[in-house]
Length: 323
Image (tube, rainbow, N blue to C red):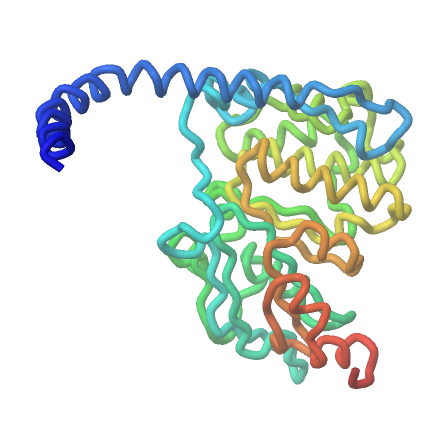
């Protein structure tokens, strides 16, 4: 017993010296760890790409190139700007009790939902449920009769439509909306110009594997390729929140699977928060952290993909019958 007590006393005397030693070397150790992790991530992203695939051929950039896209020297050399999912003090996007009417039609009826920093959130519902109307309210194309929309804690309703991109929100459209008289690269330059050129259009085009057609007029391109041009334009603005309106439209089953993987990579490589409107349930359930469900302008459910798939109210809305 005495030996153990004397041993404990010796350990107590050593403790201050041990702490001082650790503090003196902590900075160097952390730099070494950061460099090792960055190197490992860069190596992990270097994998062969099938040139025949339309969506999975989207270039996966190394750490330095992604760093340039994000406006920094490389992801491994600076702290991540994206908070872990669920640890933000407040949601990045808040739609609070929003109502929007068109004459006698109620498109949104006291709808509320949130999107946290770093999440991929699905917004689903049958045709006419109000999903695209919600997007148009968020991006200020529509002004709601009631309710509030906040981005990073500040109202969006006082921001004009042409100021939404400067706030850090970009979107794609259900029906492709490009400048038809311009080339691919000029369309993407518009996105970069909207936020003072924070992203490099050429590098964004490399990322989405469109660099080879950068000088082509957009009307000459297939529909699926035009959707990628629209996505590149959105990414070139350097958004914090990306709204994707039915990105799987016109894609085959295999291409939808590839798109799901690509959306997850987008979230990581560009440190994005993503709000996704999509009818393809397999895509939504495979990528979303949470899902909100609209029906006839009302929110009828929210939860994880598994909870939504088992929700009898959601099943009834889609199939017209109770489970």
